[in-house]
Length: 173
Image 1 (tube, rainbow, N blue to C red):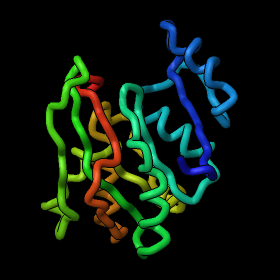
Image 2 (spheres, rainbow, N blue to C red):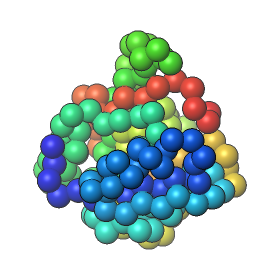
Image 3 (cartoon, rainbow, N blue to C red):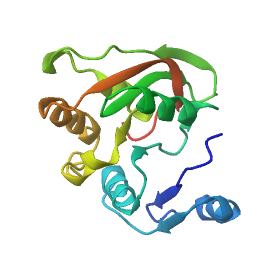
Image 4 (cartoon, helix red, strand yellow):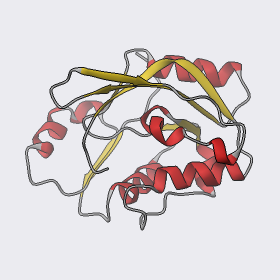
């Protein structure tokens, strides 16, 4: 529902029907590539490097944003001076049945950091990625490592108390 958006899709060289789906929506995608990579975080780093927007959100296959997610995120950034914003996450099981809603608070210390459980709902200002990227050697924890480093560097976090993303259980982790 937000008009000024850039869609970048990084596919790790899929051999299933993914490319057919990508091609079906090619008119809506600003850039896509399908090539072997070193995993999810390598793909995320590639996509971020190609992005031009001032706000970056990352969503994986089988996950999706709620209908007005981007509008809420942009409005939050316009009204608040923060480097990150995140919200709640709705978890679905493999049969697409509601499992639970995950909601965490803004951490007050490094020890309290638990944003890893809401990573599909996290949006960051683009400048952060100019000095900090995901470590592709960390197979399933590079997003948490990224958040730890961001918090340690003093970046600020804001919270929207609404569901921003839907995530299915399973996946790489």
